[in-house]
Amino acid sequence: MFRSTLRGMMSAGFMVAAMATASAQVLEIGADNGPTGLDPHLITAFPSFMVVNGNIYEGLTAVDKDLKIVPSLAESWTVSGDGKTYTFKLRQGVTFHDGSPMEAADVVASVKRLLNKEMASPLASRLSAVESADAVDAQTVELKLKEPSAALLSSLSLIAIVPRAMEANKDALQKAPVGTGPFKFQEWQPNGYILLTKNDAYWEKGLPKLSGLKFNIVPESATRQVGLANGQYALLPNIDAATALQLKGRPNVKLAETMDLAYTLIGMNVSKPPFDNPKVREAVNYAINRQEIVDAALFGAGVPGGPLSPALKSWALDVKEFGCYAPDPAKAQALLKEAGVSMPVAVSMKVLPRQDIKDIAQVVQEQMNKAGFKVELVNQEQGQFIQDWRNSNFDMFASINAGQPDPDEYFYRTFRTGGSTNVFKYSDQEIDGLLDKARTLPDQAERKKAYDQVQRKLACTGPVAHLTYGTLFSAMNDKLKGYDVMPNRSLMMLRGASY
Image (cartoon, rainbow, N blue to C red):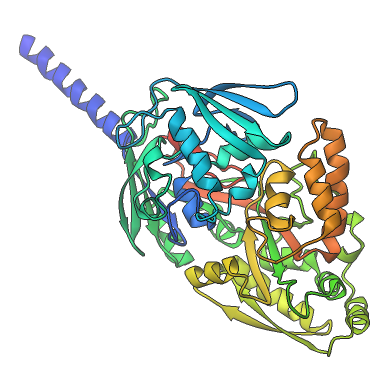
């Protein structure tokens, strides 16, 4: 009887161990593109952001599923009466993946690293209001601002804290990242996969539940779909509408969706003809039929979009307010004649290598060619596209850009003169004044008035023709629990997922 009981206990023990192993395995993810780098202060592409944000790295604050600012590496903070001094209390017991403690000196070094002009960080504009960063003690950081910054706490959610030893190192983190997140970097096989393993010393007890994340680089959509259907992959994050439509109703596959903060766009270089003329930029907007793009390229899963996502209900204007959003090829041609340019206006459009963007570019090409333009599409591989984008080496480009919860985080870096992602070379004194004013106002109603003016001016004559905001989908095996898609495309919810 004793032996029987012992065998039963051992059997039960093995079952518990097997169940634990089954719920704590490496999650296989099917990704369409590999990252171009992993340094959180330098990356701009979604494939890089998807790997590092919230998984490897964390900021002082974080953004939750409802786009609310919540504590992360800072457990609390206080703000001075004049709004120019922020004091952050750091969590106790947080360590980097190399075992070193995360302290105030690391936060200070991270801020200085990002603001160092030699780093040329695309995130620098988010912290442009910061005058100084100081470690009061090992667990307390003080940020002094030149002027109040209403978006600071939101911006800090994207400012990864890295070890202080990396402050002057521009290369190491691109291929070997070291953060505080729930998963730590283990291996990168270019064009193959990136493997992250569980951070056993993670500060949030009980997390992560998975033993790792493996981002498999699979460019072919059909291959990813087959892999999800047969169980090879458990998650296809942030997929387009066409892929979601093909996966809908498949056995053992479930879809999650939300309104995307990211937007599709046509960018224009205003530092040279013909887009140095605002009438030509306005003509582009009249040439475009945004609803046709939604129907043809997004299979109806999206909406025509202006400078801010409709998901930002407190900020975004209705596109009906923008006169140039009413498609009118004749009006476009009339504006080109007023601009004095030779017709048809010959321009090249560089295209981000994503199928949805390629589809959108083809629709826009056809629309513009009917309205006085002659558009040549230039398809590029991702690395070359990003390099040309950063160097402003384009007439036009078709792409998708990340949106953020606060308008300042997008508008200031993109449209302010000298902004860190103002690759369009756009400069407008009225826009500069409105953006400078809006980020310092403590009252949201007053900020909205300023951003309403910004939206109205940018919509028709700005350097970007905003096109659509799509429905953002993720497809997953129905055994995956605790994960949901986030409007900002972050995969940080994987820390609480199980499979």
